[in-house]
Figure 1 (tube, rainbow, N blue to C red):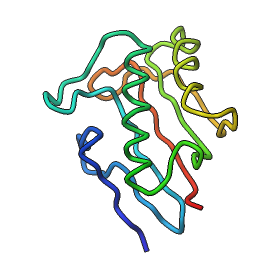
Figure 2: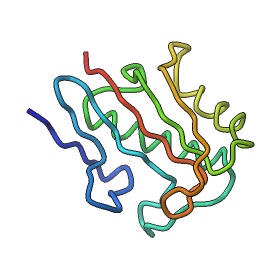
Figure 3: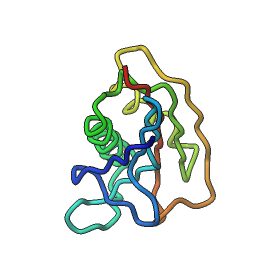
Figure 4: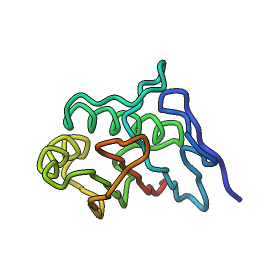
Length: 126
């Protein structure tokens, strides 16, 4: 059985998908970008601020699903420019206590709404 997870503390999906799905104690979180919750517009300030916003949204989704960053086992980061890798890493690392999940980072030709960063995650509920 699957459980659909959505929270008003993260951007609503911009297509036919949910923020997250839980199946057999595994939470699959959709890609999340830096969208303002009120205006529904993409935020493009600095890559660090955008990454922080995305990570905060992911934290809200994790919380809604009954867990936190300590439950994350896999992340996928999509960047529009791999030159931002070090800046994204700096912010991303601050959300974990040193027990980092597996991860892939990919430079994409284009992200939804022309975002600079998009992150998806998988977590185990224990």
